[in-house]
Image 1 (cartoon, rainbow, N blue to C red):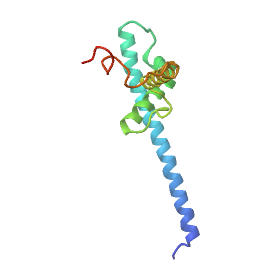
Image 2: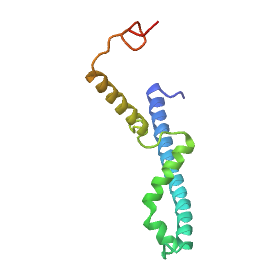
Image 3: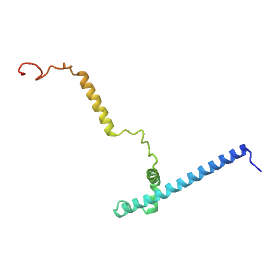
Length: 128
């Protein structure tokens, strides 16, 4: 028996919702696994440089939120997604350039105008 268009649309919506849920679960698991790996590396570096005396499990548990943030950033970078608020951040060189343009415009506005053609070597005394 053929499904009606309404039934088919409902089935498609259910499949999309199921897929989104599975993707979220996969993504969370991926982030957590990556965070644990990052934190294990950090713990080893800290432990052997004698910067921490915590056992590895406690260190991971204590720093999991920061580890998840780092893991999410790494995963996004590796998959080509935008990280953080890249569009909103201003580059320091852009700010400096804008300031220089503003200063130049102010300097030009406040300086007296020089008439064209009246300068050294342009038809005055001593030119031959």
